[in-house]
Length: 338
Image (cartoon, rainbow, N blue to C red; front, side):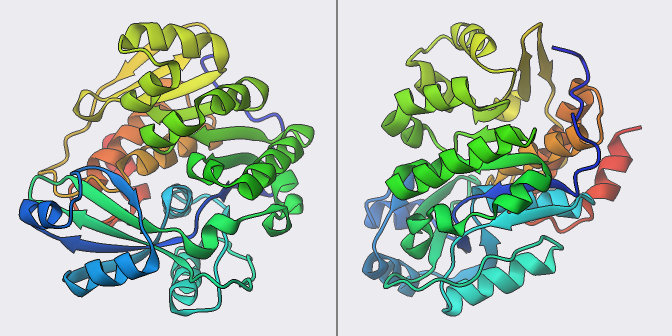
């Protein structure tokens, strides 16, 4: 593995295209008692039905709504950093779908996905933020989980330097088929394939197929410490590091307050965290780290510099509510990176 991770085709029109669940994030501040009274485990991601969603929202004070979802968070932050990016996701022509479409376009992200016909509503996730900055998610996947091959834009994938795939889509068989089709198109087009594992429970459900996917298609992997341990069913992080080093060309492991690890075929580097203020909300921290790191790759920076940019972006986003930066990320990076 070279210190610098270069594009094989500088002439591609799009820097990165992301595929994932198109979800409207609905943020609310709650006390711990609210979680207990609704039988929710702090820090968990819970899949809920539309009626459960209505019941929770009736008891919440909504403070912010954004076009969210793991992949969308990364793509929007890349747009904020000045990159040309596109997002592909499934929405219906309904209030949540229209909000998502309008909001993500405001960021400068290309979003050409046409509204689909579906009995289910567009997806939304209620993000409950407790005073310790932990977030507990109650997600109604609705129309987004029906993602299928017909929702792909293979022409855009061929024109993109990177294809960014969200592990959450693996829960649907149709989406899984679309996932593989997108990966094959990318591989044939010399587009580098990036996977984010999304959630340790998601890894628990799909461990073997994720391992096969990484082995056969993935160039770059993003995950946190718990997801990596789940992937290899191993509690010793050093053993996990050696395993992923053999399996994937480049892996980025976020460690929360301990920073992150850059793992490639030749070496392992640890990147320190950037503490930019009081931690208020950890929503999307891993997604924003990925955007910072990928921004560095798109600009052909050394891997350690990419890691520092990722750490700066993540360190900033946790000092505010929600996964959309209140500051210009380009200026923020300039402030800390010479």
